[in-house]
Length: 403
Image (cartoon, rainbow, N blue to C red):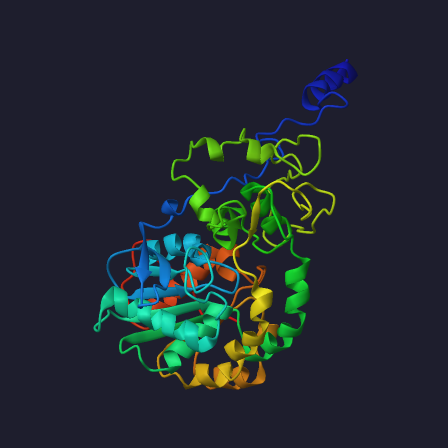
């Protein structure tokens, strides 16, 4: 009798064989990334084209914010001002500041009489001319923020001592020693990239899968700034509508479905992933994927905005003597790196002497401000508040310096 009762109780407590116990947790359903390009107006409040001299040299800038110090944002070689899109939104929500992101010479929507002159002198003159054109002879406090090549140019601009209101200098992932060593492999890296993309969606997906930009949201707004239309010659940003429901941006667009092969592949089918944790994503390219196109296709598509291989003779000038110049600048300084191994001897000594603030953000690639824009914004906001250059918002949280 007792045995039968026990069996009845156990039958209620133990689930039938083959069925898992019930759970309130939702099943982990694979999700697809979106590679539709995003218009710059989602992150910036305005854009302007500025003519700086009698040669008609015109520079595209993007702005956000109306009060506080001006963050002049300088992108890396081959990138564009749109690489700062997510960072700009994040940092302006944390502290009172103004954003001026610049398409540098030969990049994005900027056009000069000699786009291949990327010498450090020419680019430094460009930045000072732009700042003077916008703010006149008495600009508000200025903080130069530069990534890679842009970081080197920021140091050179600061070293000229021509910005009377320079209040701070922030350099992201560029160090003289490691940069000079990397120059030898730059040509092979540039040659390894696809020469042509059949749509902006292809380009965005390539940038994410190859690891150039590890944040797909950032890639969607910034990648068009790196390309030009093969048909019109214009920067690819001109092909993106500010209307999110534009036919050119819907998943059913022919551009999204187009591939170099004869078969049609639905956009996004070649990449599906589950919820990912930082640092666990693999970005190895699939060589036979339609999102890694070959340059032989006759269909008009998108090419790289600038051919950096033609400017190789100017690369050493960006980085030569960079560490000494950086350390000699009297303004408040921050060096933000993607790895501690990038720090050379001269900067290591300078950091130990307290000449600048050092912050290392692991688990991201070279495009630090695109991969982890929220973290970079928190570090920059803390730097600005600590040096009494601005006031924090309600969302601001202190970030302690860390290596």
